[in-house]
Amino acid sequence: MPDVVLLDIMMPKVTGLEILSIMSGDDVLRHVPVIVLTASTDAQTRLESLRYGTSDFLAKPVDPCELLLRLRNVLAAKSHRDYLARYSEELEEQVRLRTQELATSRERIIQCLARAGEFRDDATGQHVIRVGRYAGLLARELGVAEEHAATIEQAAQLHDVGKIGIPDAILSKPAKLTDEEYNTIKRHCEYGIRIIQPMLDDPGTDLGDLVRKLESKETSLSILETAAIIAGTHHEKWDGSGYPNGLAGSDIPLEGRITAVADVYDAISTARPYKEPFTDEKCLGIILEGKGGHFDPAVVDAFVARYNDFLAIRHATQ
Ligand SMILES: [Fe+2]
Image (cartoon, rainbow, N blue to C red):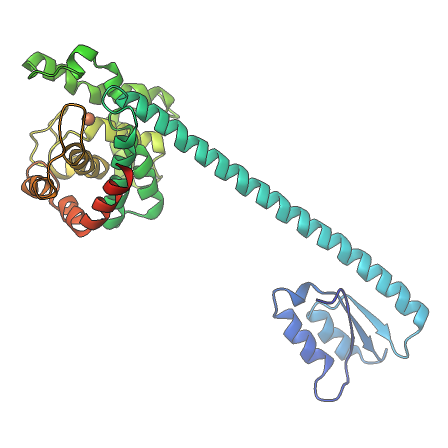
């Protein structure tokens, strides 16, 4: 790559203006300074070469002293420009690295919080990671834009963060729960929202505000806003028989409908201290049976379409 081009205009086979035209159309070459050698009387050629971004002219016949001086100036300017370009590349690289670091640390903090919620049930934290992956997979299969699908993948990990507010005696009770105890368990949805809510940009935001924001589609929801929606709606059922609000159909935010399938599939397909996993056939049967009752039919279809990916994630994280 030349630092500078000394270009004559009248040459055999190709003219200097043709070369200038090619250089000005090339992303790299157009930054190389060009000194055009012209007869001082040729105003038209000077004008045209100016249009192509010529750095300087030199009248023929060339005076060696003048040539040296022009070259020195043009090269000094180029060296300064190259330095600025390198500096800006370095800055961009630093910003990219720092942004990546922040994203990674945010991801890890979300995982820590999610694991804390599940710690009594699943000390390894694999459940929350899998539910997040399943939710991301379903979102993408359902055509959710990549940026929001990635947000859902992270946010779904926090679906049960509210379990941290449920007493041990109820959460870990081996025997059947009484109605009252079951009602206490159901409160983990509300606790989840209450844990996440003060961290939102506007801590006064409630679930209704978030759903309206989601429906308006004017701004994208942050991870924590999405997490609050998921924490509050992942136990709602398509037919309206779920909790805490008995929402039905598309009144349940898609994020909650997606996480419902992801959460149930993981609960039935993996071992817990108190139970063996169901067989693949039984798990698939339970999800299919829930189509249109417990689950959004479209989400079940997405589950079936990506069933092999579900199996692959499960086998990779057990
Ligand atoms: Fe839950």
